[in-house]
Length: 222
Ligand code: CA
Image (cartoon, rainbow, N blue to C red; front, top):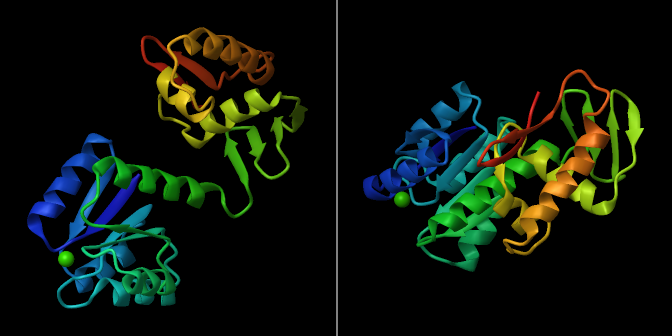
């Protein structure tokens, strides 16, 4: 995932860049609004983090111009003040979400992943990985066109794996996101459900999609 960070304060920018790179995002930085527009037009970003107070062109203007050029990349706006007016302006100019400085880095990461997920699935509600399809609206799953019956817990688990496809998800992440609990005792439960899911998704198919990463967790990928 490639992110454009538009931020003129050097310390703030390097703090964000360092954190994002640790999370394995590819990050480019633009330090004024004009450069941001230029970068966003020539590179296919997955997300833009856009400060409002910027030299040359402010964030609101940049956001409006991007949208008027039909560049529909998700935009997360940053501002130093938690002002209702800025928030309204930002969202009206076409931003998808808004974060007030100062913020906790975890909060930024959470917003980013939510926006990236939404961008991947919101148009149709259908998530695809290879020949596996999950329809979030109909709660239906097919592999190679054949419908697969899942319990609601199996469905939630598969949906989480698919939203994070190609990324390793740990048992802790699964327990927090699928079970909404954080018990060590869930480890066995998760493994049991993962086996149920494997039997339904991968059994009888040449290409396995659910992989165990020893000592880490699971990954769903081709
Ligand atoms: Ca600024």
